[in-house]
Structure formats: structure tokens, C-alpha cells
Length: 304
Image (cartoon, rainbow, N blue to C red):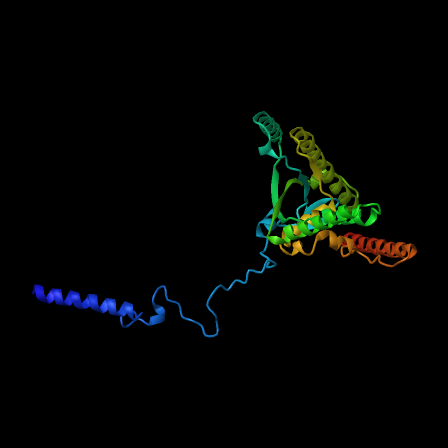
């Protein structure tokens, strides 16, 4: 009996080893492609990585969408939401904390903690990583080299070499810089506002939101200035720039926001090669069209 069990065991071992060597399923009734860990091959596809690694491939900025889920429009240097909530953004210039001594670091910590302890409203901190853009410094160097007629030839050559080095350094590999922003949110309670018509109500809502948010930014500016952290409120153009870099992380490396602005791609009407009188006439027509739309909306509201 023992001999029979030994022979059966040895036979099973030999069978299993043979099936493994032949890369066949151990169980004969299981198809080869159904074996765990073995995937069917598709004709016409090459082995290797399917990701081309294109640096301009975009990834949807889901976290940024979560910051502003119900945006209505951007106006008066604020982001307006559908429920009369307004958001004002401010950029914070960082301080090089780790180059300071212990006493200076403790002073910064104390100032920051004091500011946070005085807040009776919520704030949000948003950090944005961008590709390092040296376009502006390079343009400044080129401007000096072009306009300075008394520039020594060696100085001109040095400036040209510096420009080439900066361009090569920027394009050599991805380099990033971090921008820090403070987000102040405020919801206007329309029940506390008295107005005769919808137009007056709209104006008072915007004024109240701007006054409150501007007060909060000025408070942060005054407190954080003691820690050498300068706070700057972002205008409508600054908010648009943050949005542009938020949703065009990689494309912004080549299509710079300032270039789009300089080429007047953000203009509501064309101003290239036009006389001042024609520009003013077009602006007047736009204002008349907006006024007609508002009057029509008012008539519809009164009819209802």
C-alpha cells in the first residue's frame, strides 16, 4: 500500500513539473488563457509601455474643481458661486523659513499662530505647482541689451550666454515652483439687504461681499507682514491666471498666460489696428446691448 501511494505521489509531482515546464494549465480542463497571471495576447500590439510619456498630456484637475464646485462667474475681483457665496483670493509671498535662526523661526510661528487664533471664520489654503517660467527675466535682459548702445561687447556676449544658459536650464528637465494662495469665502444673506428692485439688490450684494472679503484680506496682510510674509489680493486677471495654470498645468509651459494676454486673446472686442473713435463706438454699442437685456429682464419679472 505504501508503495502504491509513493508511486502516485511521484507521478503527480512529475505531472505538475511537466505542465509547468510546458507552460500549460495544471488542470487539463482549464483553458490556457484563463490561468491566473496569464493574459491573452492581442495581435498587432507591441510589447512594452503603452504610455508615450508626452509632457503635454493633461490630467484633469479634479482637486481644483472640488475647491470651486458651483462657480457662476468671476467679477469684481471675486469668484461668485450659485448660492451668493463669494470667494476672494490672495497670494502669499513665502519666507525662507529654514535659512533663519531658531529665534526668528519662533517669531514667525508665533505670528502665524496669533493670526489663526483670531479668526472667527474659515479660510482655505491652496498651493499650486507650476513649471518654472523664466520668460520675463529673459525678456528684461534682452531689453537691456537692445537699448543700451554703450554696452561693452564682452558684456553683450556675457548677457547672450546667460540667456542661452537660462533657456537650457529651463528646458533641460521639468522644474517647479510653488505658489501659495489664501481663499476667503463669504456667503451673503439676502434677507438682511433691503432694496427697491433687483438691480439695486445685485449691487448691494456685490458691495457687501467685496467689503467683507477685502476686510479679511487686509487683516491677514497686517498680521502676516510681521512674519515677513506679504499678502496680495488677486484681481480678476490674477484669478484668471490661477485658473489657467490650474487646468493647463503642462500646456502652460509653452502657451504662457501673459502671451495670451499680450495678444489680446482675452479681449471682449477687437482693438487691433482700430481708431480710438471706432473703439469707443463699439464699447457704446456693447453697453447699450447690456442695458437693453437688463430692461427686458426687468419687464419679464414685473409681468410675472
